[in-house]
Each structure stands twice: as C-alpha cells, then as structure tokens.
Image (cartoon, rainbow, N blue to C red; front, side, top):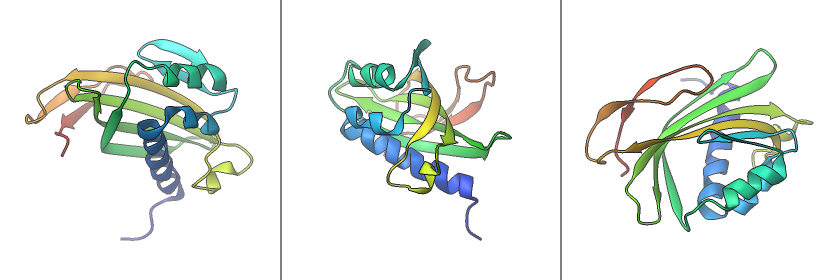
Amino acid sequence: MGEKPIWEQIGSSFVQHYYQLFDTDRTQLGAIYIDASCLTWEGQQFQGKAAIVEKLSTLPFLKIAHSITAQDHQPTPDSCIMSMVVGQLKADEDPVMGFHQSFILKNINDAWRNYTGFQMSITETYRHIGYMPPTELRCVPLLRARRTISLVPYASVS
C-alpha cells in the first residue's frame, strides 16, 4: 500500500500530538490554538486561545489517559482538514468512558507542515459518550456533532 494522503498524515500527527499534550500537561495546548480558534465542550462554547486554555486547564480531574479507537481525516473544499476521533478515556478513578471529538484544522502560514510545532486555527467539538463496561462490544450512537450522527463499535481500553 502506498503512502497515506497528506491530510491523513497531518491529521494523524495532530491527533497524536494533541492527546499526548492533553494527557500530560493541558496548559501546553495553548501553543496550538490561535485567537480565532473555537471549542464546544459538552455544549459550552469558548472562543479564543485564552478562553480555550482556561477551560481545558480547569477541567475537574488530575490525571487522564486517552485511548484512541478510530480516527478519520478528510480534506475540506476550503483547504482545511476535518478530523474525527473516537476513543475511551480514564480520568482519575472514574470508570472508563467513551468520547468523540472532532477538529477542523486550518493551515496558518504553513505551520502544519512542522509536525512537532502545530499552530492552527482549530475548531473542535467534544462529547463524552457515557460509561459502559469496558468488556462489552456494542454500537454506541454518537451525540450530534456538525449535524451528523454516527454509529461506531465500542471497544475496550487495553
């Protein structure tokens, strides 16, 4: 199989970088946002780098670990990349729960060509799917994100 399309390479690199920062030091996520970035977190909307970093930095848990189950990346007609991520997370001593997050990545002055130093206009939507015993495999209806509803297989964290 040949090399992946550039939007998949950029999207996959971004997802790896984003969740590594989120899981280790959320305050460092400020480096990837700009003032035009938007975040919708469980229905609450935030715009601008400062508001987004404040929200992410004050989430009510001390430690978190994400396990990515699936990710899809598509180019958009306006030269952006739409990335959708599905997975599981474990926060503090809470039960494992599913999550869905989508991103729209926009190239700012060729910044996304540097995979270790993302700086993009990012618009994202985040939803917890809810707790399910991690040993079960079932289809979970994802909550509404950008007017689409999807069904995904629910797999346990290894």
